[in-house]
Length: 346
Image 1 (cartoon, rainbow, N blue to C red):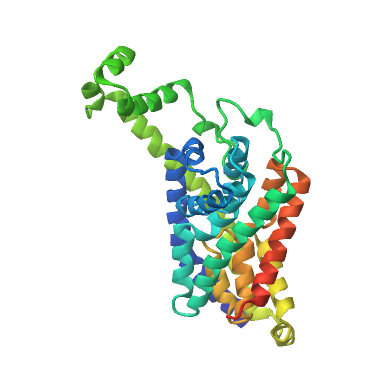
Image 2: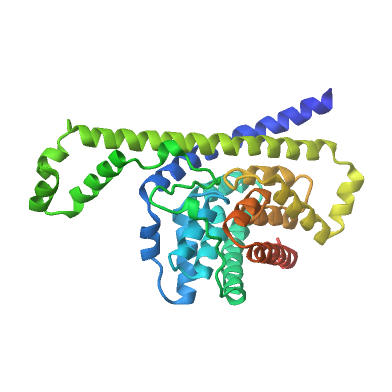
């Protein structure tokens, strides 16, 4: 009974420490999804390969998406002609360096081991750039699967491979969005010719079209955030329970084995991160709890690999990219993370 009590205490502390960051990240992700288009992202990409990769990393900072959320976005970028290294650098860096994850990582390790915060940030960027560059050298042919049923005017595949039909644009909603766009871009004369009302009338607070646009935006953000929140929470529950159980139940002899074998301990937590498939907005708190059992190098391997690749986004990758591309990408991530965590001195 005491074991169950100890597991429950550790589980609850991990869960409730993580929950605010998941909620904040879900809302922010929904806002970005609503107002930032892929076309806007494409316009920011320079032609230079190295600068393009850096821009991909920078985009990862400004787009707070979880690891599987960025895969459909990266696929669209590649199909729009964005260089492969840029899309991969963005895909790998975003779940590690976006503001929500940085904030949660800082909060988790600020009072224990701040070096893990900096190593996660620096190595996350470095690995994203290296893997992106290597993948561009290895794959010069078409790597994206063509899914004609998902491509078209009503395409709105979200990060979990689902299409929320209630959020797909209907004709009336598109008209509202176009009106808001034209309100900013068209001249007063052209706007009145097209819509039959002046800009001043359209801006009026009681205008029903704008009220409906605002209502649609709020409903979209709330639905998207709620979907993300509940989808992530189930993984957080599993992760927190496993981490708590490891701390309480793992025999000391096993811990001694990990303690005296650096590579084995790193690999153990890398595979733990892969099979756990926890969202990067909350995995810092799991990593923090593992410091009582594993070395800093092993925890760094957990913090780096999990956001870049896991079972969950492996399935999403296979659905969007060719098998050879996906397998090569996974192997490169494992190898670079293992080498980085083995060589670094924390």
